[in-house]
Image 1: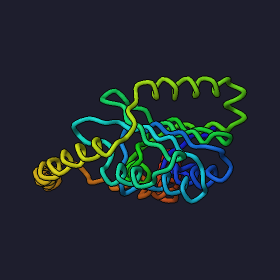
Image 2: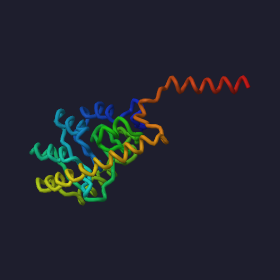
Image 3: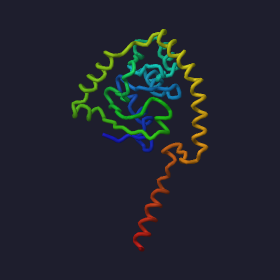
Image 4: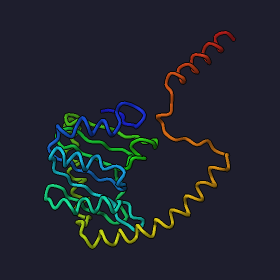
Length: 213
């Protein structure tokens, strides 16, 4: 079992690279996905791994229309997208035969590289030892029962909503700029900005001062 966060070596990008070739199939239930992060989908296509993707669907367009269109264009029984209305909020990626990630990260560049996210990765042997293979099977079966298969009609409806949200986002960006101009809060860009050496130096300096005192 390993702790996964985008500020250490056990990042989601590293997990994808280390497990995609070893797995037999990928099952993923991820509520939100943006077209700026197609890594999981494209890796399944490149390594010829069957993919069952479950995303959320509601009026906010949680899955980018570009992603929905990508799935429709595949026209393959091995690359499937299904959508659960309103209640899906999971973030689970199961590389069957290799291991599973269960955590907080959505399928977006922001979640994979900038946000403070956390989760656990369990290897295939750990899943077996903890009787979690059946648990994961049961989870995905339950999600599948509530899911709708992606259709061109669903894509078109979500794409129309997406255009409307685009106009609203312009107004939101203006509010964000006003918030940042206030100067009341520091602007943090990424956990990668944390300098480990600087942090260690500060700890040593504090220890040295306390020792001298």
